Amino acid sequence: MQPPKFAVGQTVRFAPDRRQLSSARGEFKIVRLLPEEASVFQYRVKSKVDGHERIVREDQLTRS
View 1 (cartoon, rainbow, N blue to C red):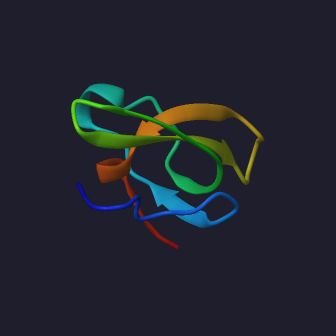
View 2 (spheres, rainbow, N blue to C red):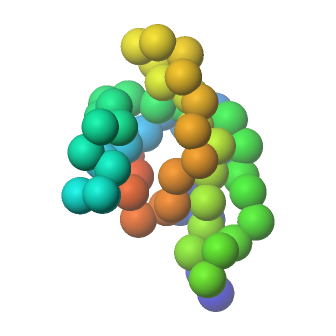
């Protein structure tokens, strides 16, 4: 298994899945690295626009 791609404090762009169309896209800050789920890293992120926090998979994030 490779190490996580992103670090706490890093700014990333979030792109939701098709089933999450109502989720806000945009820039988020990594708040915490969470345990893997099905061999995929997960992160707690916080929106830079409204402060909303959510849990996302690594494959939903790109470098900002």
